[in-house]
Length: 315
Length: 284
Image (cartoon, rainbow over all chains, first blue to last red; front, side, top):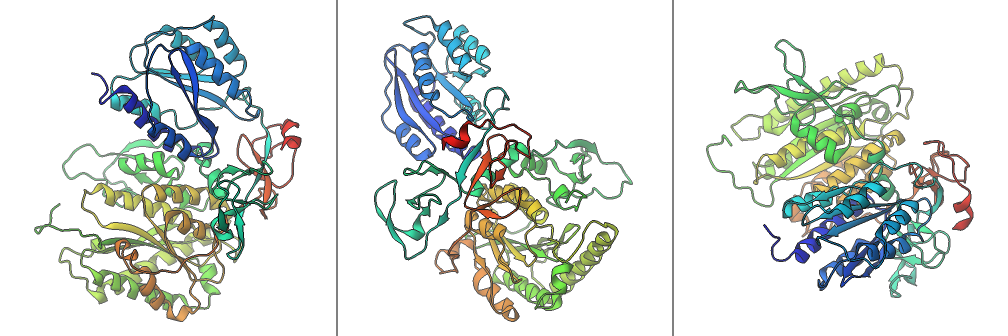
C-alpha cells in the first residue's frame, strides 16, 4: 500500500504539480515552503510569487528524520504570515505523514492564535486520521482529508489549487496600487534589477514608477516596491468571479425541432444504438450540448459558446 | 474508425479552424469588397486541402447577432478527393445563407446600434475550441489543430473576459491562434491571443493580395513552422484599461475582492460594492 519509491519522493513530485497548477489558477498569489524535521520547523523557501524558486527547492535533496511537531510549524508559519498585508487571505496546507505530534507547549493555545490571526489551516494526511489535525482544521475553517493511495493524494492536493470562497471578515477589501509595465524600446540597454545582468530594453519590462528594468511578471519592483502585473494575470482569475451556470440534463424527444447536433462540436446527439439520448442544455441560451462539451466548458473554457454567440440585451 | 485503409498521421497533417468576421457594419465600409475577400478565403481553403488529403478545414462565421459553422471539409464525402469547384459552391452558399440569417436577426433585435458594433468573436472562438476538443477525443492519431482568425471589426470590450478565458484554454491545450487583420485597426485582443498561444499575428498592407499573404504565412503546418521565419510582432501592449473611463493606464488601483481596475483611489469599489479601508492607499 505504501508510496513508491518513498513517501518523500512522491510528496515532492505531487507538490511540484500542485505549485504549477496553483500559479496557473492564482497568478497574483505567493507561496512559501516549510519543512518539519526532528521536531523543529525550517523555512525551505521564502514566500514568493514565482514558481521556479519553489520547484528548484523541491527538486533538491529533501531528507526526513525524527519526530514532527505541529505546534512549532504553526508558530513559524504564523510569524511569517503576520507580515502579509491585510487584504491577503492567509492559508497553510500541511502534507502530514506522521501519526502523532511532539510539541513543547500547549498546541491548543497555538491553534487559538492561528484562529485569531485568521489563518486557514488545511491538512492532507498520508497515514491515518489524527484527532489534533481534525481539530485544527475545524477550528480554523480549513479542510482535512486523508489520502488512500498516490493518485488519490494527487487529486486531493490539486483540489486545493482553485481559490476557496472568501470569507468577508477574513480580509479587508482594499484598492491595491499596481503598475502595468510595457516592454522597453529595442535600443535601450540597461541592467535588470533582479539578476544584475545587462539586458536590452526589449527583453524586459520597465517599471512605470521608477523606470528600472524587470525581467518577468508578476513581480514586485525591487527599487520602489510597486506590484507589477500584466492584464492577462488579472484576467486568469475572472472565471472564478463569473462562473458558467450548470447545464440541465434533457432527453431528446421525437419531433423536437433543433437540438440534433451539439452546438459546440457539431457531434450528433442522437444515438443510433437506441441507448438513452440524454444530453445537456444551457438554461440561459437554450442551446444543446453533449456531455464532453459540458465537461470542457465547465472545467477549462469557462464560457458557454451559446451565450457568447447571442447578442443579449445586456451587451 | 470506419475507414478501410489505416490513416497514418504524420507531423504535418493539420486541422485549421478559420474564424471569419462577417460583420456587415464593417464590410460595408471596408476597402476590400466582401465577395473578393470570400474568394481569397475559399482559394486559400482549397490550397490547404490540396497540401495533404488528410488535412481538415472548418470555417466558423462570427456575425453580429449569431455565430455558426459554415463549412466542414470532413463532411465533404468519403471519397476523399477534394473537389475544388464543389468546395467553392458549398462554402459560398452556406456563407450567404448565414449572412442573410444574421441580418434578419440583427434587424429584429433592435439593440445593435451603429457602425462601431463588434462581431461576436468570443462566441466563434469558443465554438472553435469545442470542435478542437472533439478532435482531441477522437483518438491518439489526430491532426495538429490550430485556429486562424480573419478579423476586421473593432474589439468589443464587453467580450474581454470571454476572449481571455478562451485564450487561456487554448494555451492549455497548446492550440496556436493565428491572426490576419483584414481591417485598418490593430486588435489588442488578438495581439494578446497570438502572443500568449504562440501564433502569428499579421496585418497585411495590400489587401488585394490577401491570398498571397495567407498562403505564404498561414498555410504551413505547425511542425514545418519551426523551419520558417514568420512575421514577429514587436510589442504587445499588455497594459490594462481602467473600468471607469476605459483608457489604458500605466499604474492603477486594483480591488482586492473583484480585481476591477481603477485609475484613481475611490472609497468604494463600484463593481463589488466593498468599502476600502484607507490603510493601503498611503502604504505603497
